[in-house]
Length: 170
Length: 197
Image 1 (cartoon, rainbow over the protein chains, first blue to last red):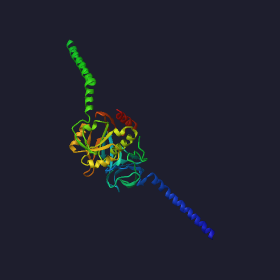
Image 2 (cartoon, each protein chain N blue to C red):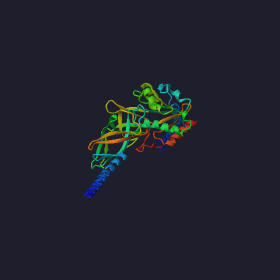
Image 3 (cartoon, rainbow over the protein chains, first blue to last red):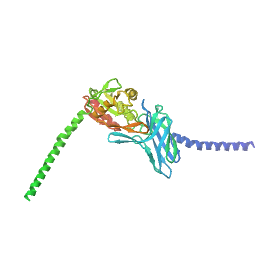
């Protein structure tokens, strides 16, 4: 009687462990890779850069994948660290750096991945409420026309980071 | 027939004349114009204020190698990374402590000398420069630098501007340009040449 009960306990404990591992493993992996997924929109490798003293703005960069069957638009966002968030494009024209707010948003076709990176598309954060420090993780909630809100953890790298690995491009 | 050939002669002489004019332009006048444009880059009667307490004028370019670049503190990408690049270049160049670097704002309405002091303060040898809108505009023209306000949401704005770093030799003569995101080794080679002059 006691033997069979302990057997049942053992199986139960095993089941609980497997269940916990099954749940925790992907969660752990997600937080390691800084992935976020909501409404069929997947955001990966989101990063920003440490701000300089008195720099009240910052860009955030990431890859956006639309796993849905229909196209979507990234139309804006909010952040706990910024007064205002816009979707911008930077482009070099000759030696002139040009900034442009994407008034209609950034299109992400069905099944497509769009890269927001230094020198190109970026999430522009205005009126930062504190200086961003290397090593901290901030939160941006992106707004998509169809998928709705996607909240993304954004890692802050060094001042000259060119990618989510934080390495400076030489 | 004789008349026609006369016209043709005139036309041929015309072509010869055009050729002569073209060669004169290519060989003589155009390089001379470029040379004179080159030697006046940075020259003008602007007077701005630098975060090191000095006035920034055309005389600031004389007496040592100088690097000048343009930007604004409400800039998310180019300006902070260029400033960061400069701090990385300095580590790779012997004698870089002799190089005067000026970060000149294209947005003096928001970037006062006080604000620029902390903005550039973390990179050794870099001074921030600001002044009145009028003097900044004079300076931009003297350096042949483009800058334009671009409205964003609300009352806010951002700036389009030239993103290159301009290098000047000991005599204040324009020496070279380091383009935005120029290869690190190329940038360092240019600066080594400038500092070694």
